[in-house]
Image 1 (cartoon, helix red, strand yellow):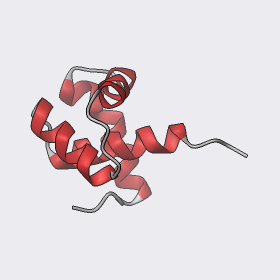
Image 2: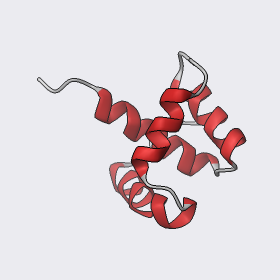
Image 3: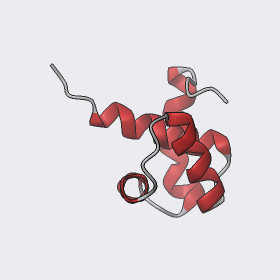
Length: 74
């Protein structure tokens, strides 16, 4: 599983997260923060998919967006 969707695909997936999952992104970010301490993004995406019944595409997009927003901006 790749964590690298095209920017266009990533934007579309992120925009649909609330509609498809019934939860807003901050709720998913909190679930990731409160979940197991995995070192790899792939592990977090797999856990999110398995634990919350998401498709891997949406789980991957949520994890990628979580990482993107956590990075310090210079």
